[in-house]
Length: 182
Image 1 (tube, rainbow, N blue to C red):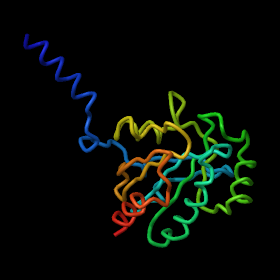
Image 2 (cartoon, rainbow, N blue to C red):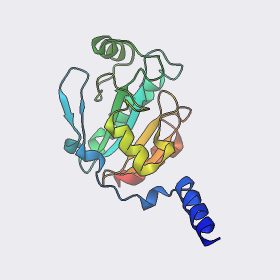
Image 3 (cartoon, helix red, strand yellow):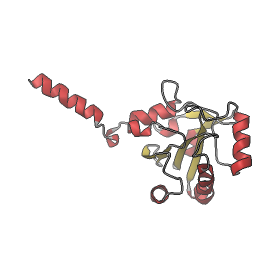
Image 4 (spheres, rainbow, N blue to C red):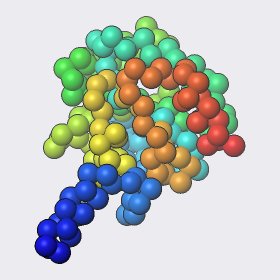
């Protein structure tokens, strides 16, 4: 009977894992990702900044969120916010070429915040940043669709995640960013 209780409690604890209990062997700043033009983006360069990590796609119904992301970047970059776009074809809605994505973003949305190369964001082939976020924050960190947002605090830990439906200009995202920046 005691063995059954112990196993049951272990299973329950697994499913209700509290992100605050994560031990964070690594932080966000321990990673690198390839930029859209082939350069290495060393996330260590973003230490002591707040990062809004967003998986993006050119052919998605949420693509117009690029405008809000650019506005956030323009408004808060001098205060310590980094908007980092991760173009992804994980949901089959992204162009096949980094140059096409870069051109699309610049021409249609005047994007000048950092973008990575086209990167997988879910499953076994996901970039290690997304595997790290899942490990430390749980399933809410896994993108369910394009324009899923992961907010990273100045310590390099996942602070909050937001679904694709939550606009970057939403009060809850802006309030959280402003709180983290202060």
